[in-house]
Image (cartoon, rainbow, N blue to C red; front, side, top):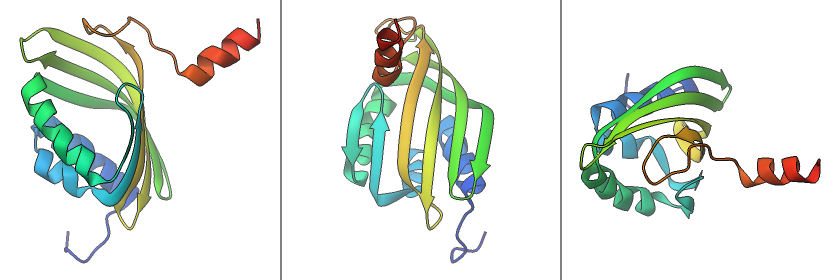
Length: 143
């Protein structure tokens, strides 16, 4: 693709998972706007590209394997949702099997907002099932 051509949301999402699965974190970082806003269920809220750049080192050190396989993708305009299956291993080689979703909002062919939700995990440090605080409170208030 020519460098002056803006990627579609589908192309950005495909490049996101391709770069993650190859461990190509330099390419992965180019997919975000400099003012990216991210809400990650486990890591919290962050703004700007700097926290992502700093987080790459943790990914490299913390995981001996990190694969995110898209299971279902829906793209509409500049938005996309991906349901994924993560097969990973921590630095000690202990397996991690998790499922979750990413919501993306694009601006000018790059990710401007991203939300990550972990639906379930078999990691040693995570509960078997996690619930969004909104889902938990909605469920509890309907009792």
